Length: 271
Ligand SMILES: C[S@@+](CC[C@H](N)C(=O)[O-])C[C@H]1O[C@@H](n2cnc3c(N)ncnc32)[C@H](O)[C@@H]1O
Image 1 (tube, rainbow, N blue to C red):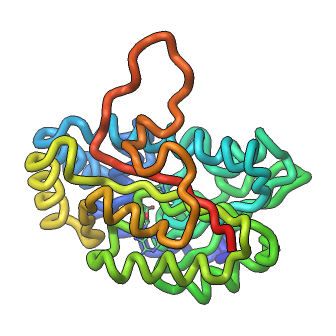
Image 2: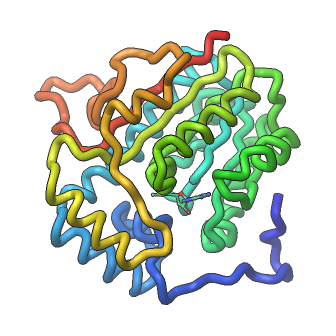
């Protein structure tokens, strides 16, 4: 892990430019953000109030997906790339609640996430967690460093939630997924979620355009077909590519949760 211990040189945090992890944290109701992030988050929300539901339904999807992988699918190792700032129910907490021996490696390139990494390193004694400070594109390094904690000859749950949209070119994002999956064995699973442009359309695009003008971490909406393309060659689990709010929602006597403009899927590598 990159050193985030007391006494080590603190990473450089720029609090003058809004950052993806910090705005996401603001929408989720967290406190790990700066006035510049709050202002950008509020501007976005004025144009597109649904973003708060998207952020929250997306975290609920993370919890349901990890629970499913650790439960029915028997996955005991997770690689969560684009972790974000610690919040309630981080991947290791959900996985280790289902199976305390689970091992989790987190990866992000935001210096503030690195300074908060200690909150992600609260493993059960039976399991393990680690944090890697790396760029998503550096797949060789991610896998090499993850290999210190995970046994990459055994199935891994690869979590890529709200990060592939930060790669401007969809072809490049697909190639990154391919490179990561190529090094994971059969039985591994992929979970992806990203903002789309099919439920609410124009207003979401406008808000994203404003975000991209203010941030150094631009984001690009995808179509559900582009999200499906990450799963080429995998078996996509039911219910397929759907809004995050509709992926195996908790049973309820009331109507289904609303559709939100962020689609997700979970798939299994069979060979
Ligand atoms: C919107 S947050 C999502 C957090 C979490 N995955 C979730 O869905 O709740 C996106 C995260 O991806 C990280 N990120 C963006 N581009 C990245 C890159 N090229 N390499 C590594 N991390 C990146 C950001 O720092 C941020 O923490």
